[in-house]
Amino acid sequence: MLKSETNSSNTENFKPISPPFIFRDPNSPKLIYSMAHTLQELVEILPYVPFFSIEFHLYRIEKDNSVISDLGSWIRYILGLEELSKEVERLGSEFDGLELKEKFVHLMNAHIFDE
Image: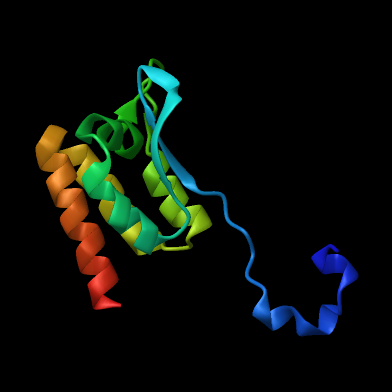
């Protein structure tokens, strides 16, 4: 039975289903390292995601010189965390490699534990 077929007056117990963030290999998009549906899940999987995948999804410059931040967009539009997305995008523009991963993990942990 679909949710729409049930008693619609009891909708406060249902949460919308959000698309997960999927960490893929930049050179082989079919290769998936991990995925997260929530910020908590993101924090839990980050230690296992290669730094180059985090770097690719956090900040990259396309051929037309546009800047893409898949993670920043997911945090902003799916999780609704505008200020955190700005911090994430700033990190991506300032750091790279293992240093970027370390700072990103630290930022995510700080955000989770400050809430």
